Length: 141
Image (cartoon, rainbow, N blue to C red; front, side, top):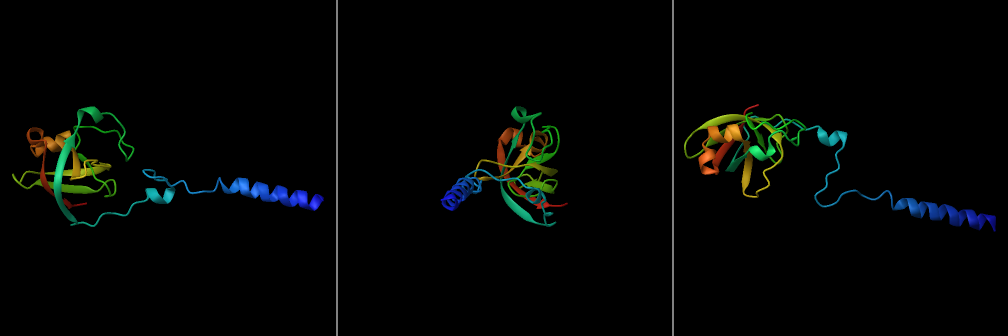
């Protein structure tokens, strides 16, 4: 009789604990681990084109995805996947104006955009008047 009690008890504990060991992966949730924070360097010369916009006032002083504080007067940008610290030469296709920016945030969240530039970088490319524009970006460092 005691044998059955312990068998039922152990099986009950195992069953109860199995619910705790499930995956924490949910839509829109990424589990941050030490290994996921280590990013490879982007390949110098990697080039992409697309629509870019800029962001500034509402985000100034807030923490970016990299952990640093956003400063709209710095030459930085948000990119969905490039490693933080990657430097890009961003050229506005229509005018030829260019700027060097550093990736320090994630985004843009508008699906058709490839970059969100800081306000300073956006102004240097003339986006303060246009809002957004086609750009070519090249990894330089």
